[in-house]
Length: 608
Image (cartoon, rainbow, N blue to C red; front, side):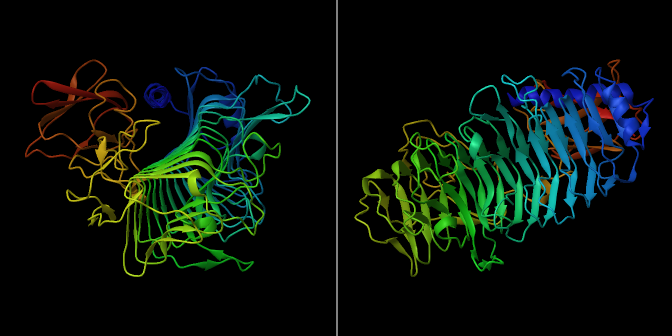
């Protein structure tokens, strides 16, 4: 699915940068830009000249195609600042990219709104808004008062990537994934935008804590919680995102939250509504952030994952240094005030049922797994069919497993967990009949080691091996993207000396200036190669990273098939840079030669 989407984006860059570089019009007026874009369903590149523009508020409505898309971009990434009441609306549009703008407004409008759009890419922008109003900054939804089902203009397959969202001080979300409703029935039925992707963004400084509705990302809402979103949130960095108890609030079905990093953020990833969601391979760090206090006097904690609903998978997550408890424990299973299929009030807290929590690592948190909180006896529906297996928990204080209010007994199945309390910590606390034998929990030293490079505690060759207790599916990878055999280390990491695909994210990995591996993920040249080529488009210098040890030559070939630049690789260099300043603007192919007659190709464009 995503390979097809990514292919569209690279073809967008290649075809239209190449076709429009030499005779490009630069726009300084939003009305002229709208006229040009909306009259160009055949596609094209539309460049806004660098500068500062006040009250720049275009509304685009254009249906381009996969092979003839539209790119609306700043002259250089970060070179166009939009101030005042500036905002962008795309309505009933397809195959449009918005790239490289700095939104630094003071208005009361959503900064970018997609109404009934598909295959829109919002990339390499910076979002900031100084306002006293409750504003959703980027909104993906349907078309107001045009919602007959099946939707003539559905929202789907949009991508929000490599942006910065920063300094939010009022309610509303950084990103809201909404949808449309079927108005032909006697009772409105809501449907979420589908197959949207949020990746490689930097979310920071969302606060102070609001009473509600200041999540950094909200996917769905209660009335559409039974619809399937298939949203993917991956490889984003969240820092100091404190505005809501839910950093990411998932309120629909069939979404995936994976390979993100959360640092010093008060709150949790919350499976608030919906079913069949997957939380996988994320890193959570308290980072020494102390317990805070909101304006209303409530305590604020750095937390992990809170779970309601049915048929979720919570696997391969890493949590360290968190101080959360009750709502905000590293893994939180409260009771519920409703049962799936038995309540028509979709805003309730539906008990967790048929949930698998496996291969997670909890290390040096104030608390561990907390179960049974009944919210002052207002939640009276117990958990059902919960599997907690092959997790690794170790800590020095409080208890690794705490029964907060209500013992859930046989409704929770424990299998092959390693728990190692040290110092004053205990294994289990609370009023409970639960006891742990060797099939449920083994109390032994996990023999972890602190990895100075990734700043996490990882397994070693001496870490115990446990049999996989999950039969519902094959868990073939660990948090780092390495192979997990049938018998493996408990916790998120399985000891391996192979290369790491997913380490905790750094600032340099996300946002407008991060490079993107669009080559191997898009084209079918050599999908096993890890070579990165950036920036895209290339200006003066082309960087190649992760060249294999047997690479001996790199060539740049023009569209006539002629080698216009060649470089011999010596001393098994892994990273090189090529001077492309003397090449004319256009489309080229990079050929990477390795021993054994292996040739890898990458397409690039040169744009001065």
